[in-house]
Amino acid sequence: MKRTIAKIFFYLSLTATLVFIFSGYGYQWDIWSMGMGFTLLRYSAYAAIGLVITQVISLFIMKGAGAKAISFLVIGIFLTGAVSGTALYWQNKAQNVPPIHDISTDLTTPPEFVSMVRLRADAPNPPEYAGEETAAAQEEAYPHIQPLIVTTGKQEVIDEIVMLIVSRNWDMVSINRAEGRVEATEKLPWFGFKDDVVLRVTEIENGTSTRVDMRSKSRIGRSDVGVNADRIEAFLKDLERKLE
Image (spheres, rainbow, N blue to C red):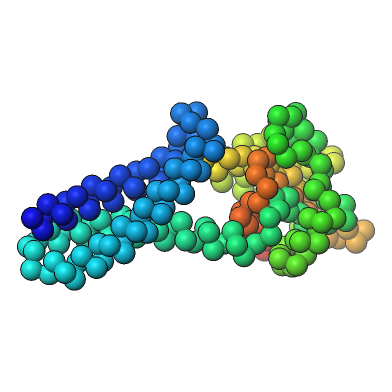
């Protein structure tokens, strides 16, 4: 009887885990709508949290239930624990970042999308910069998002930017060396959302230094859950390291 209960918990855990995982891929593969994807995501996360608590309690109750029963419970706890941890992590992050989706190292004159405009024609979020309210929210939440200034020449910096984009498997959209502009798109795993980036490279201090500004904007959604700021921070850190 105890083994049967443990097995039921295992299959419920497996089901909740698979629904959680495929909630995003189902939307990305056009099997269901985004609304349905988020509904499946939410309820599978609730189920996983309930199951992990129940199975932990059951693990203590069923101490003498035998190795197989315990194995079913342990695997179930592992599966639902992973789902619960992932869900709680993103929920916590969403609650601690502002509901914005357009991040830039230059809030006065943000780099503009040019070649990207046609690709964003049907996107809910337009290519234009989101405005002063977004800038104020960014300054408060992400004060560390700043332009990168290096002593490397402009064209060499562009070369390194292009190589970094390629190494990240982003889709290159355009490279304009004369204007110092590079545009690219990253397709996120799971739900397959697309975020666009534009980098502006300019010579400063009479050509002795080069400034790199970067802007990252989601095509869909009010809040990016901090993804765009994280992307800019990581990219510019890697670029700085490459140029040292």
